[in-house]
Image (cartoon, rainbow, N blue to C red):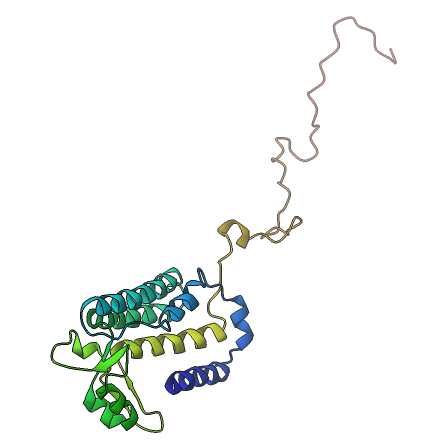
Length: 234
């Protein structure tokens, strides 16, 4: 938990250094966000600690339901930068946790991280959702095998690395305002109001060229008077 909090704080600091602001999170729209707290809350439910039989199946079902909700939530928000990495991490963790009814933890990694109390607890089978890794576990490379020494003193899985990297990317990107909840419709992007000025200045059309020469009468030629007709002045 301390490592997660440290990553969140560091991400916020980097976001500020990059010119971002926390208030930009107000523009972030999360779809189906209620699935996230429900999925996390399911992992806090008490489950049977048996390693075989019905206890194992119940524990696997509860953990699988939690991860499914988290995956649906992240999949609905995969458009947000960083979330695809979180999805990869959740898939990796879900695979190893559901296959073994809990997260297998490497004993060597626990020792290297300096967590003697955790090691004693796992040896006494006091960890319901975590247990010491054995040769009977599946997908052992995806378990908690990455030690993080003091002052953090934590053991991580490969999936955890993807989740933490995705969270950091998401925080920095949102703070910089590089993501938006919705995009404006295409037809509205160029609209500037009812009295929008034209994009280019228009000019009246030029009249067609005249067929008369300069100084020439523009009317039809006068017809000569008929023979014998009287005219004024005669």
